Image 1: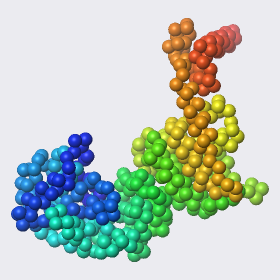
Image 2: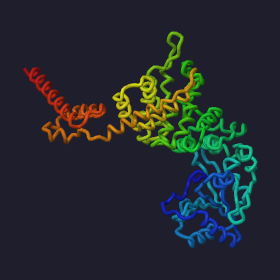
Image 3: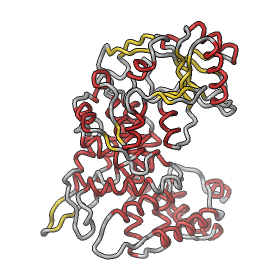
Image 4: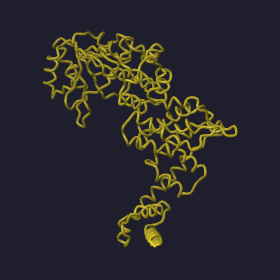
Length: 474
């Protein structure tokens, strides 16, 4: 099945002007008695003043054969979904479709029977859209807005409302789409639309579709917490986000967390992370790390002498983090990044509070897959933990130490070939000897001294092992 969420024409480095091409096509279509409309998110974002380079047009009133003829005259035709009336032109960021109807033949997101009907009319064509704000159309030639379902009014009110109850419930992905639109635009989902979402079976969705909607919320919304808050209101966390649901009601130590339970804290951290995501090296994994950072409190939280504690939660939660991520993605890089960040997210707080040695902060950064990102995660966590006293940022101290770490890492250092050239064989314990050299590097020892110390360490180590082997053989 083809649905409005899928993009037909991948962006090319030399992509042409989709708007200019849309106008050329529209003028040809008009001369043949048809009409061309901008549709979907392109119209919505244009009204809101949001830049959107994904241009979608819908051709009404001419046959598929006539449309193909026009497109072939304009360039190289791409029949990505010809059976669904969907085309593209090579080199242009432009999706071209014909009106169609969709009838559910199963429970899944792709279980639809699609029929192309160029003479369906704008009202019926817009009826298959999910939300009124996405059902708006704009004539490419005249600029006239076509609004059959009060989308303009809902945009003005900041309301996300379904177009048609009968067709809306046929696609369970729309519950997630509603939540991510609410997050991106900070709109309110109409209660009647929420009611429809509560009855949807999200278990039939492919994880790629679920991950895709979550990704849009995490990377495009200023307050991605709204995505998860809306799913909570819909009672739709259980299927795909059970670990998040388990955060609800998990208490925290009031001395360090006056903001509320772990759910409230996590949502606050997520929004703080969103304000930092443009600065980090890996925005999506970074946002996921913020989302998952306190999963360990589900299993580690306990009351000791009347006080709530969650000792070692940064490590105890790793199996939960892995299970959560593996439910949603197969990308090992993401999983490795997030688990690394979660395991270390408490370290910056602790070392900064204690004003620990350069050696300790160097070791922390060395263990991190993205040291700067780790600082940003720690700051998002720190600022979201409302304490009785004034907020104090650890970022200046941590950034100063990161500069030292980077300077140390830029110095010449002992490598394997240095040891071999000095006469040390690359035996089975070679990696352990290199680890010793790396510790000296983190401590700021210059290469000449580090080489001497490493060679001495390696030779003594092998001498001890040789003596031990002789004792055991006697």
